[in-house]
Length: 251
Image 1 (tube, rainbow, N blue to C red):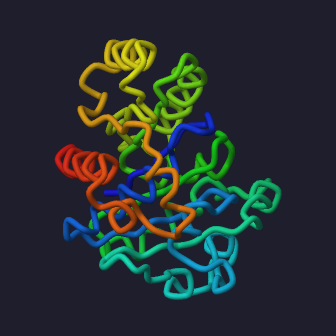
Image 2 (image 1 turned 90 degrees about the vertical axis):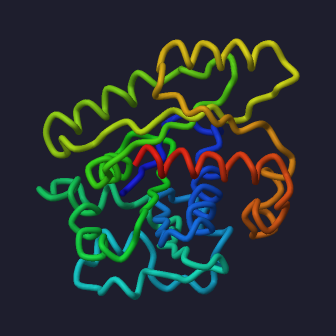
């Protein structure tokens, strides 16, 4: 199962979800690989010291002769590996322009190690450029985090349209696994109204699990930890564990 976590809108909890959902699945005994495809590399910083990165997602997609072990870094979380990202990934679009296999690079690379993992997560940048399209072409499922705010569904139509275009040609097996309500503030009527609207629009595709706004979740990446080591008894830890179970059930 290859799950791309995507939303071209920034600040929706996409990287937080990539970090903690991948860790949750590893804690459930699954062999997990997280591939950080965001040039900002925020997922990577929770697991790997930036100074120790010799080969990253950029080299994975451009230097096709380099063997896989060079890109895989072990994390402190048992059964969780990561392919880290660096700012150089921002140059990928310019590097691949005109290449006939540009959108298939990640799919072709993953094929050889796919059997080594139960779940592969792809954390994408907040754009619908060649990096995100590569992830959609390589993936089996899409998970869309949506913040419970006034402009929650803004831009979602563009993402869904891109998913349909990918399904129509390069990846007909791609399916929408679910929509995740994030940054939910249970104290406000707005959050509840937005959640109700998301459930009305997406029906059963909306995950039952909701990720509430949490100081602990926001703090944990700064300490280079997942929520499970930083605040194991927090609401964020229990919510991402519940989400993990839903994801594995849907997959």
